[in-house]
Length: 145
Image (tube, rainbow, N blue to C red):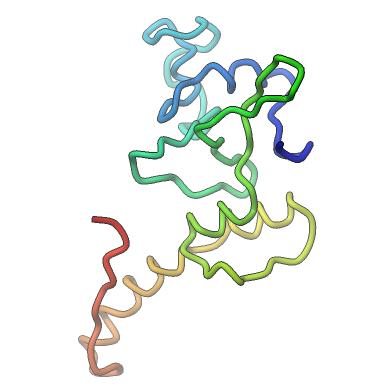
């Protein structure tokens, strides 16, 4: 069962529930199969974004985060979309499992949304440092095959 702050409710709760994995609000435009609720390209790309377990994932933003691809059964016959757990957001950003964030869930989302993924930071900073001779070598670890 998901925690209360993980359940997507409110005005867009049902729309988030209906968007298939890998889709966003565009699912609910005239061009796709959902409800014709939004105009084409009228929102930011990550609005109502559902992650897809078979594709690379977007990181959480500081205000808007993607939703998990699996819905949550509330136990009364209804389902809701689920927000990512803090541990899942940490994994997307390549932080170690034992990394701790201070504050509320919203604070954690904001901190991670403003962060640079660790492996990306290593790649961006490692190559020039190796070229300038400040470090001996730079090798990338392949995270996905």
